[in-house]
Picture (cartoon, rainbow, N blue to C red):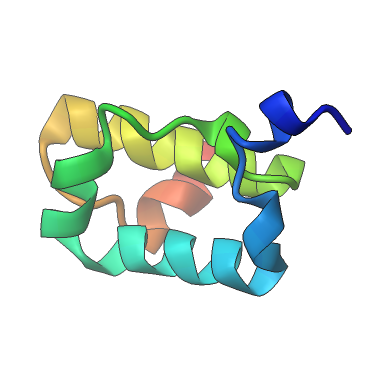
Length: 76
């Protein structure tokens, strides 16, 4: 993989880190508020992670609050 492209992902940190980052985004409103404008789903490796991050960002932009599990289920 091209190092330039790889530098713009969280792949170097591993899948556990990526999962923990998503978990933090789901429960820590202040964290999401600080980084939502620079966060992109493409930072994550798996399509499922990209989808989750995309929905979280969209929801936060629209409602200025964290997305709930109910919203994820309703959006599926």
